[in-house]
Length: 113
Length: 114
Image 1 (cartoon, rainbow over the protein chains, first blue to last red):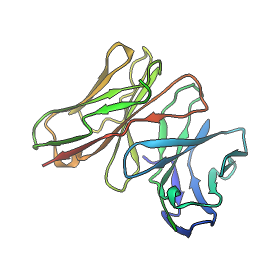
Image 2 (image 1 turned 135 degrees about the vertical axis):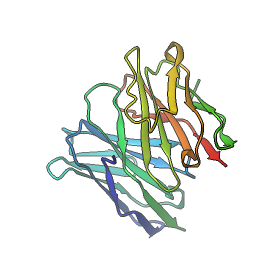
Image 3 (image 1 turned 60 degrees about the vertical axis):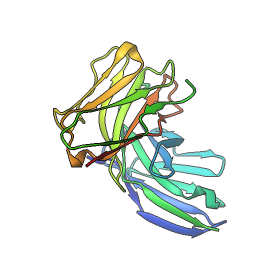
Image 4 (image 1 turned 120 degrees about the vertical axis):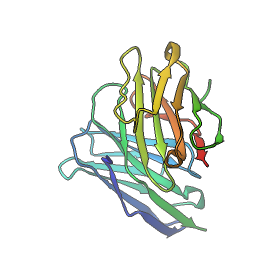
Protein backbone atom coordinates (compact mmCIF):
# COMPACT_ATOMS: atom_id res chain seq x y z
CA UNK A 1 0.00 0.00 0.00
CA UNK A 2 1.14 3.56 -0.62
CA UNK A 3 2.44 5.35 2.46
CA UNK A 4 3.09 8.73 0.89
CA UNK A 5 0.44 10.73 -0.91
CA UNK A 6 1.72 13.66 -2.93
CA UNK A 7 -0.25 16.78 -3.70
CA UNK A 8 -0.92 18.13 -6.25
CA UNK A 9 -0.76 15.29 -8.75
CA UNK A 10 0.38 17.69 -11.46
CA UNK A 11 1.83 21.18 -11.35
CA UNK A 12 2.60 23.55 -14.22
CA UNK A 13 4.54 26.75 -13.60
CA UNK A 14 6.53 29.37 -15.47
CA UNK A 15 10.31 29.30 -15.43
CA UNK A 16 11.60 31.41 -12.55
CA UNK A 17 8.62 30.72 -10.31
CA UNK A 18 8.80 28.59 -7.18
CA UNK A 19 7.30 25.10 -7.11
CA UNK A 20 5.83 23.69 -3.92
CA UNK A 21 4.95 20.03 -3.66
CA UNK A 22 3.39 18.35 -0.64
CA UNK A 23 3.46 14.85 0.74
CA UNK A 24 1.39 13.29 3.51
CA UNK A 25 1.94 9.94 5.15
CA UNK A 26 0.11 7.73 7.58
CA UNK A 27 2.46 6.03 10.04
CA UNK A 28 5.43 7.09 12.13
CA UNK A 29 8.66 7.37 10.21
CA UNK A 30 12.40 7.46 10.74
CA UNK A 31 13.08 9.66 7.72
CA UNK A 32 11.44 11.02 4.60
CA UNK A 33 13.16 11.35 1.24
CA UNK A 34 12.38 13.10 -2.03
CA UNK A 35 13.33 11.68 -5.41
CA UNK A 36 13.14 12.92 -8.96
CA UNK A 37 12.43 10.83 -12.05
CA UNK A 38 12.95 11.79 -15.66
CA UNK A 39 11.34 9.91 -18.54
CA UNK A 40 9.91 7.08 -16.43
CA UNK A 41 13.29 5.54 -15.70
CA UNK A 42 15.59 5.52 -12.69
CA UNK A 43 15.00 7.82 -9.76
CA UNK A 44 17.56 10.25 -8.42
CA UNK A 45 17.79 10.94 -4.70
CA UNK A 46 17.36 14.65 -3.92
CA UNK A 47 17.25 15.11 -0.18
CA UNK A 48 16.62 13.23 3.08
CA UNK A 49 15.11 14.70 6.23
CA UNK A 50 15.04 12.83 9.52
CA UNK A 51 12.09 12.67 11.87
CA UNK A 52 13.85 14.93 14.38
CA UNK A 53 14.54 17.62 11.76
CA UNK A 54 12.11 20.31 10.69
CA UNK A 55 13.78 21.89 7.69
CA UNK A 56 16.65 21.17 5.35
CA UNK A 57 18.20 22.95 2.39
CA UNK A 58 20.20 21.76 -0.58
CA UNK A 59 20.91 24.28 -3.31
CA UNK A 60 17.54 25.46 -4.69
CA UNK A 61 15.70 22.79 -2.71
CA UNK A 62 14.07 23.32 0.65
CA UNK A 63 12.26 20.51 2.41
CA UNK A 64 10.18 20.75 5.56
CA UNK A 65 8.80 18.05 7.79
CA UNK A 66 5.91 18.33 10.23
CA UNK A 67 5.65 15.04 12.11
CA UNK A 68 2.59 16.21 14.06
CA UNK A 69 0.70 16.62 10.79
CA UNK A 70 2.54 13.73 9.10
CA UNK A 71 3.38 15.92 6.15
CA UNK A 72 6.34 17.24 4.21
CA UNK A 73 6.82 19.84 1.53
CA UNK A 74 9.45 20.25 -1.16
CA UNK A 75 10.10 23.74 -2.46
CA UNK A 76 12.11 24.31 -5.62
CA UNK A 77 13.04 27.96 -5.92
CA UNK A 78 13.68 29.82 -9.18
CA UNK A 79 12.55 26.87 -11.26
CA UNK A 80 14.13 26.01 -14.59
CA UNK A 81 12.81 24.12 -17.60
CA UNK A 82 15.27 21.35 -16.68
CA UNK A 83 13.37 20.82 -13.41
CA UNK A 84 10.54 19.29 -15.44
CA UNK A 85 10.19 15.77 -14.06
CA UNK A 86 8.17 13.59 -11.70
CA UNK A 87 8.88 14.00 -8.00
CA UNK A 88 8.26 11.31 -5.39
CA UNK A 89 8.31 11.33 -1.63
CA UNK A 90 9.31 8.15 0.16
CA UNK A 91 9.21 7.22 3.82
CA UNK A 92 11.40 4.90 5.86
CA UNK A 93 9.92 3.47 9.02
CA UNK A 94 12.94 1.67 10.42
CA UNK A 95 16.00 3.09 12.08
CA UNK A 96 18.51 0.84 10.35
CA UNK A 97 21.10 2.26 8.00
CA UNK A 98 19.27 0.62 5.13
CA UNK A 99 15.56 0.30 5.34
CA UNK A 100 12.73 -0.30 2.94
CA UNK A 101 11.21 2.85 1.44
CA UNK A 102 7.54 3.26 0.64
CA UNK A 103 6.89 5.61 -2.27
CA UNK A 104 3.96 7.80 -3.16
CA UNK A 105 2.48 8.04 -6.67
CA UNK A 106 4.43 11.13 -7.58
CA UNK A 107 3.86 14.69 -8.77
CA UNK A 108 4.39 15.68 -12.39
CA UNK A 109 6.06 19.08 -12.55
CA UNK A 110 6.14 20.98 -15.83
CA UNK A 111 8.21 24.15 -16.00
CA UNK A 112 7.36 26.28 -19.04
CA UNK A 113 10.28 28.19 -20.57
CA UNK B 1 30.83 -0.09 -10.77
CA UNK B 2 30.06 3.59 -10.61
CA UNK B 3 26.32 3.13 -10.62
CA UNK B 4 23.59 0.51 -10.45
CA UNK B 5 23.45 -1.41 -13.70
CA UNK B 6 20.35 -3.23 -14.93
CA UNK B 7 19.96 -5.51 -17.90
CA UNK B 8 18.33 -5.80 -20.27
CA UNK B 9 17.05 -2.24 -20.61
CA UNK B 10 14.07 -3.46 -22.58
CA UNK B 11 12.50 -6.90 -22.81
CA UNK B 12 9.54 -8.02 -24.90
CA UNK B 13 8.30 -11.49 -24.14
CA UNK B 14 5.35 -13.65 -25.01
CA UNK B 15 2.74 -14.41 -22.41
CA UNK B 16 3.61 -17.61 -20.57
CA UNK B 17 7.38 -17.34 -21.02
CA UNK B 18 9.83 -16.92 -18.15
CA UNK B 19 12.06 -13.84 -17.90
CA UNK B 20 15.15 -12.99 -15.88
CA UNK B 21 16.07 -9.43 -15.00
CA UNK B 22 19.53 -8.63 -13.71
CA UNK B 23 20.78 -5.98 -11.30
CA UNK B 24 24.39 -5.17 -10.54
CA UNK B 25 24.51 -2.86 -7.50
CA UNK B 26 27.16 -0.39 -6.46
CA UNK B 27 30.16 -2.24 -5.12
CA UNK B 28 30.09 -2.38 -1.33
CA UNK B 29 26.39 -1.56 -0.99
CA UNK B 30 24.92 -4.05 1.43
CA UNK B 31 21.25 -3.49 0.63
CA UNK B 32 19.51 -4.16 -2.68
CA UNK B 33 15.89 -3.47 -3.53
CA UNK B 34 13.53 -4.34 -6.37
CA UNK B 35 10.53 -2.17 -7.21
CA UNK B 36 8.20 -2.08 -10.17
CA UNK B 37 6.42 0.86 -11.69
CA UNK B 38 3.40 0.59 -13.92
CA UNK B 39 2.62 3.37 -16.39
CA UNK B 40 1.98 6.63 -14.56
CA UNK B 41 2.06 4.97 -11.15
CA UNK B 42 4.28 5.11 -8.11
CA UNK B 43 6.80 2.49 -7.14
CA UNK B 44 5.56 -0.83 -5.82
CA UNK B 45 7.98 -2.60 -3.47
CA UNK B 46 8.81 -6.17 -4.43
CA UNK B 47 11.76 -7.51 -2.42
CA UNK B 48 14.67 -6.30 -0.30
CA UNK B 49 18.04 -7.93 0.45
CA UNK B 50 20.14 -6.73 3.38
CA UNK B 51 23.55 -8.32 3.80
CA UNK B 52 23.30 -11.94 4.88
CA UNK B 53 19.83 -11.58 6.40
CA UNK B 54 16.82 -13.38 5.00
CA UNK B 55 15.29 -11.22 2.26
CA UNK B 56 12.04 -9.32 2.82
CA UNK B 57 9.80 -10.85 0.15
CA UNK B 58 6.61 -9.25 1.41
CA UNK B 59 6.01 -7.29 -1.81
CA UNK B 60 6.21 -10.13 -4.30
CA UNK B 61 2.75 -10.23 -5.95
CA UNK B 62 2.58 -13.97 -6.58
CA UNK B 63 4.64 -17.15 -6.41
CA UNK B 64 5.55 -16.60 -10.06
CA UNK B 65 7.99 -13.97 -8.84
CA UNK B 66 11.28 -14.85 -7.17
CA UNK B 67 14.64 -13.20 -6.68
CA UNK B 68 18.06 -14.14 -5.50
CA UNK B 69 21.22 -12.31 -4.70
CA UNK B 70 24.41 -14.25 -5.20
CA UNK B 71 27.53 -13.52 -3.16
CA UNK B 72 25.97 -10.40 -1.72
CA UNK B 73 26.27 -8.62 -5.05
CA UNK B 74 24.40 -9.28 -8.30
CA UNK B 75 20.68 -9.98 -8.07
CA UNK B 76 18.32 -11.69 -10.49
CA UNK B 77 14.55 -11.20 -10.49
CA UNK B 78 12.75 -14.07 -12.20
CA UNK B 79 9.17 -13.97 -13.39
CA UNK B 80 7.74 -17.31 -14.43
CA UNK B 81 4.81 -17.78 -16.81
CA UNK B 82 4.58 -14.07 -17.51
CA UNK B 83 1.18 -12.40 -17.75
CA UNK B 84 0.23 -9.15 -19.46
CA UNK B 85 -0.27 -7.46 -16.09
CA UNK B 86 3.43 -8.06 -15.39
CA UNK B 87 4.24 -5.39 -17.99
CA UNK B 88 5.99 -2.56 -16.13
CA UNK B 89 9.37 -0.97 -15.53
CA UNK B 90 11.33 -3.00 -13.00
CA UNK B 91 13.68 -0.83 -10.97
CA UNK B 92 16.58 -1.98 -8.86
CA UNK B 93 18.29 0.16 -6.22
CA UNK B 94 21.09 -0.27 -3.74
CA UNK B 95 22.16 1.58 -0.62
CA UNK B 96 25.16 1.62 1.65
CA UNK B 97 25.84 2.32 5.30
CA UNK B 98 25.77 6.09 4.98
CA UNK B 99 22.22 7.07 5.66
CA UNK B 100 22.18 10.53 4.13
CA UNK B 101 22.33 9.46 0.55
CA UNK B 102 19.21 7.40 0.07
CA UNK B 103 18.98 4.84 -2.66
CA UNK B 104 20.86 4.77 -5.92
CA UNK B 105 18.59 3.49 -8.66
CA UNK B 106 19.40 1.77 -11.91
CA UNK B 107 17.76 2.86 -15.15
CA UNK B 108 15.30 -0.01 -15.00
CA UNK B 109 14.16 -2.79 -17.28
CA UNK B 110 11.02 -2.08 -19.29
CA UNK B 111 9.18 -5.40 -19.55
CA UNK B 112 6.42 -5.80 -22.12
CA UNK B 113 4.40 -9.01 -22.17
CA UNK B 114 2.54 -9.55 -25.42
